[in-house]
Image (tube, rainbow, N blue to C red; front, side, top):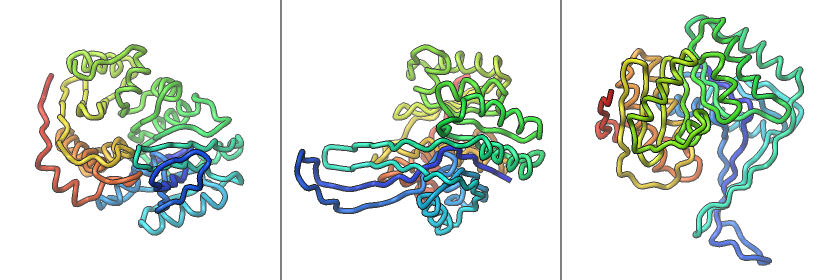
Length: 311
């Protein structure tokens, strides 16, 4: 079974306007809500690609209720850890000049509710299960929490994918997840130096140092418009980006990871799963707002993905 864990989910509210005018009444043309949070997005994409997962998330208040209803509508299986505080919301103003993103602060999570996360994972996850841990942590939760969660999952002999940033990534990786999926900025912060996405050999070298240091199996490194890398101790593959219409890059990394996780769970080879990941990532940028990839787009792009071995 595939589980995803979202410690700090949110609701993304897109408000479409013509333009922002100071001190004037601005009328919205359209409002669109999306359930959000990286782990939730991974589960939504797995469902879109005909897979099954269980999304574990901390949800609260009316916003949490709304996210649950939206997941119900999409057919995503979830297990909520309910809290009293309202789940946060992001406001995105989409205008003819671009996006204005307003990220609302989230509420603090009590230690008692954090303990429920550990209890749920201990109760649900079995040997050989896959757990995808993605995203940020709510207020009041230390970065070391990810280390403790991954350590618990390792003791249960599950397979862990880890996608986070900054101190959270630096702490969690010390517990030895199986795979990490940083983008180029997150990878730069992890290795504490600027990266040149055009220098693939150096990226592979730096990646393998991280793999050896922390006992990882793979690194999935997304490079935005420059493509992506799959790095292991034995081999490395690069996939160049496709020339597709770009509507929004939001959710591309989550779509990429979801497709890879699903195909590996279906016993596809690393190379085949990597192709699916890139098809899903490219498909995601074709959709507006925080919409994720669509299955038909992924299938259309799959045969166009070009992967080459570079090491």
